[in-house]
Image (cartoon, rainbow, N blue to C red; front, side):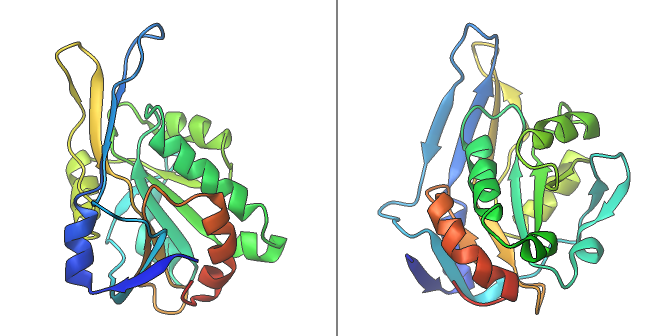
Amino acid sequence: MRKKTFAAAALLAAACLTLSACGSGDDDDKPVTAVSEEAGSEKAATVLDKPFEKPDLVLTDTKGEKYDLRAATAGRPTLVYFGYTHCPDVCPLTMNNIAVAKKQLPKAEQDKLRVVFVTTDPERDTSAELGKWLKGIDSDFIGLTGEFDTIQAGARTLGISIDPPHKDKNGKVVSMHGTQVIAFSPKTDGGYVLYGEDAGPDDYIKDLPKLIKGEKP
């Protein structure tokens, strides 16, 4: 397993460099996609010497009900990702990679794991839209939406940058968002492992059994 231990401050700087610009338009137009990553980065998992605190986010889930991230996931192994359903590449790939790995776990461990997808495009990603999209990936995944400013502030506490969706000169909707997955320990509720978009299903397959127990991958 590729891994490296970083100081939290150094990771924060590195994490902010990883952004994905995703665009969506008419079906006959190719989506605009540009990805920039930390130069020379080859690691899948980055273990933090100082874990992130779980964001204090109270949003709305796919059933239209209030979801308190800290309270609902306390004491459970949790993966958190910020993205959006209209993303043409990085977001669905990341979620599918995790879904594939999750299915390799014993049923008891699958039931313990919480995978939380927080939209960066709440205007289009309603509760119903999130539910429909996640159902095609893993119906047990949790989708959250709410006020953009609240979501942006929560992401920022994890060193993840997101910008409000906007239209480019061609009229395509573009969303800039960090592509990191943060793993939170069931022992401390701290975000102690970070995955970049280069993490594939094999990385998650190897690491999830340890993450479920709050161990280092």
